[in-house]
Amino acid sequence: MRRSLLIPSFFFFIGCLALLAHTTSAGNVHLWALRPTAGAFWFYWLLAIVAAAFLFRDAGAPGSEAVSWSSRGLGFGRWSSLILWALLLSSAIVLLFQFRQRLFLAPPDGLGDSLLILEQVPVYTHLLGYLDSFDELLELYWHCRLYLFTSERFGWHVEDAYALLSIASFVLYGSAVFWFLIRRSLFQILTGLALLIFVPALQLFAGYVEHYTMATAWMALAILTGARALELERLRRSGDGAGQATQPATAVAIVAGCAAIAVLHHSITTVILPALIYLVIELAAGNLRKIVRLATVAAAVALPILLSVWTWFLLFAEPPLAFSDSHISSPPVHRPGELFMPAHLRDMLNLLFLASPAALLVLLCLNGHDGSQANPVANIQSGARSARDADADADIDTAKSPGFFNALLAWLAPEPVHLFLLIATLGLGSIAFVIESLIGFPADWDLLTIFQFPLNLFLFYRIVSAWRDQPTTRSGLRIALPLIMVMHGFITTSWIGRNAEATPISQQNVELARKNVSQSLAILEQDPVYERVKQSYADRNKTYIQVKLFFIRSRNRLLAGAGEFSATEQARLLAALESGETRFHEWMQMPPEAFEAGYETLWKDLSELNVRINADGASGE
Image (cartoon, rainbow, N blue to C red):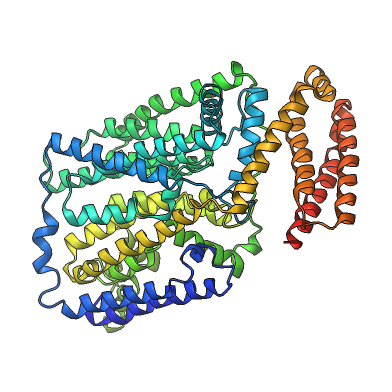
């Protein structure tokens, strides 16, 4: 972008953020991603003023004086890198533990299903050994088993076990990012920290009580390895990195292994498969024989990992894995008419803001290139002018007038590593676009911002290549980097800080959840209906525990909700719970045909009862 346009563009971008944050503090509930920064109107305008100050003092050839500090590594050796890694990692662990999640609210205001997990995981783990789910297989299994071990040995609560695995996932993620950046230039290191560490999605590793932490870490490791392999391959082909290129088979094996482990932790990561196929094709340089060889290596690594784990859970785990709760066969997707509704698009904007707050700012700075990397719209217009000036009978050189899609793709992804990351981002982003939030926003932010890592890594590589190949962008990038670091740091700390605050309501919710757990375990251990279900209909165990926990939770909420319900409404709802529980006990002991026939009616009645209890309680607050 030309320097003369940077000042109004920066003011416009940051001014829009300021106005949006101000409307959030004034009661705009639709911009939930900006809620933690509500009231910080002054901060965004300060960013705009700082940007303008840097731009006015920027003189001379764009970027020429900054090449030296951005083209050399920092000279860390092996031992100094290890010491720095240990110091930074230990500091990060302390900070993440200090600011771990302590806010537990009911959806959609809370984070994911964290409040429900405080009840479900302890009950299922103590009664069944673990809570099974094909979609979140290893995520749930490790959390349940670690909770069972730590609760019996050390008296830990379930949120403590989740915090341990959440921070342990950051050890893997943070170490991968550290070794990816440490040999790079200072400019690239700062850019990488701003885009890969200081993002709101860091919440996943701050003692997060949900099931996406390990899946995110393993998926990031797979994508990072693939991107680095393509980067080294580009250097080898250009002659700038002789002897540095990773062996394609080794890179593909590592990527396939990490991707398989990620899929076992959460099935949503399967959508990066097209990006991995492109990686194999690109590393093989389009050679069919090499493609087959690399694909065989990937299958030889991934399939044994997947099949061995699935086989164990299907044949040897107790209870065996069930597919009934999986969303793979019937995913909750939006109807086509809802995809472009204003409310849905607004939610997508919120998700983008949490995934990468400065994504639009980065693309703004990259808008304007020299040579063949021209802006796609300008390229098309230039081609059109050339066509009008040419002789009517002459053939039009299609290279001068590419289609809009090809021109846009050439602008967004001029190198193979960009296209690899763009495919991964679009795959995960399309899931976020079409999947319907089951518990509402911001609660479902975690699953639906899973595209954040490939997106931010894509932006990192675009900044690096733009600085290297397009000197006209350096003026904007020099200003954008400190802005991105400050903006991401502010938004990330605001988001994590908000969720690290144990409010009185949150503490009350946690105490009530622990009460529900203790009562559920005591009641189920002496429940004759549960014993008959276990003996005669073992496949209904999980359903019985789930619904019984619902009755106990709802009853305790009604009894503890002084001021939320009138005496008449409380008595009416308690009577409805009693009647519903009696019907439920009868239904659970019915023969299979009657059980299936009564499922829809009973489940509908219980769902309506749940809505009535929560709606009446909310209206009384």
